[in-house]
Amino acid sequence: MIEVQQNKKYNACVICPINSLEKNSLSEQSRLQEIIGLALAINLNVAYNEILHIKEIKPATFFSKSFIDRLKPVLEADKIDLMVVDTRLTPIQQRNLERELKIKVIDRTALILEIFGERANTKEGSLQVELAHLTYQRSRLVRSWTHLERQRGGAGFLGGPGETQIELDRRVIDDKIVRIKKDLAKVKQTRNIQRSARKKVPYPTVALVGYTNAGKSTLFNRLTESNVMAADMLFATLDPTMRKIILPHGAEIILSDTVGFISDLPHELIMAFRATLEEVLNADIILHVRDIANSDTGSQCEDVLKVLDSLGLQNIKYADNYIEVLNKTDLLSKEELQNWKNKVANHKNIVLTSAYDGEGCDLLLNIIEQKLTSSFVKCSVDIPPDDGRSIAWIYQNSQVTAVEKTDTAHTYIIRINQENLSRLEKLKENNALIKIRKRL
Image (tube, rainbow, N blue to C red; front, side, top):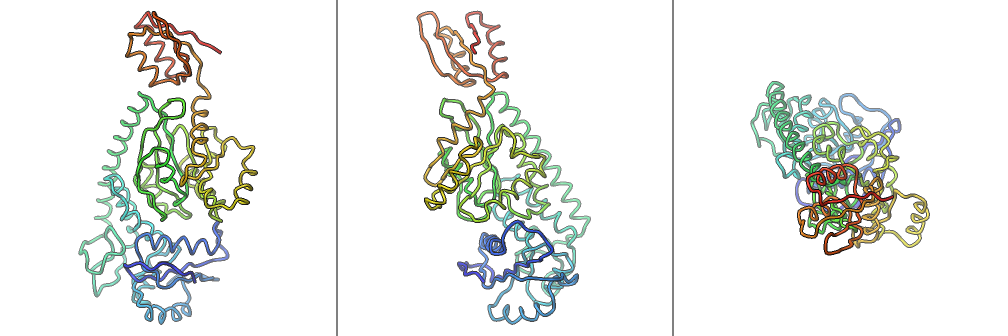
């Protein structure tokens, strides 16, 4: 049993069942720590926690009768009114456990959905969470707690008995799902319009992805000099945040902070948050932020890559636009840090950073810039000194490496991508005084 910090909401019991027949990338202690972290993320008071090795799953209650009988006095002694089970329970198992234990029971999926329900702040985020809730609960219209509330359901799982009297039959849920999907389709359309507008500027987009609590938001704040919520808790960031930043040689990009991933991420959330994660699918560069101070960093990396694979980014680890950011180097010993430096010495797509103190962030920005400009063409452009509009366009849409000024023209040595070079050539067609000379 792990000692945990006590919070104030429900008294909760956390059970982490380990089935030897099931493969899980995380160690037993890491799994327990993670589910406790999820419980603490919504201020549950974890009064009791246990790793339970099981040989056989009981269809009716998941757990054996002997375990249930052993747990009952523990629940009574610690005045526990909620049990969190770190697996996915069937509706029947959930209902039967509640009847046996006389407390509320939620599984891993319900707990994660509850966190998302509390943290989503934007309209889009709220719609996505509600869709995930309804999709999950559609198969769970089982009567329980009939002495206190008419039917199980609602937008949350931890609301007190009798808090709502909404009848959530399948017809009502289906109607809500249809409505929410229509609203999300409008959001998707708006996002596509915004994305198209950005492409016209255009600013390259760089998306941060990674396991929850890997330090993405802290790195985002460091690179953008922003103040986005960054906390040492699971799922501190849910709603996507975007900021413009300037790279070392003046190029501008959009940096996007996204929701963190987790092992066994509920399928409902992957589907519901697809609109949000489209920013990752359309990004010019993907930064995979890893917490290398965590002993399970390798397993966490695999879990993130699996989610990206499910979104359509197969073998992204070997793509040219993928950068692995090994974060939290400030938490490593000198020996551990040196070992990591030796491991990544010959890898151009990997950079060691500490978002906390800024170590490695300048190198990261340089690597991003190198990747974005690798296909750029080097040109010399002559522009009259009084043509302020064209000069401003050059600075906004290319990388200016040198300027040579005379009385009749300013010569700009630039690096520019093919798309903007085509736009520059059209600009030249409308202004005969602009001259373009390509250089190797």
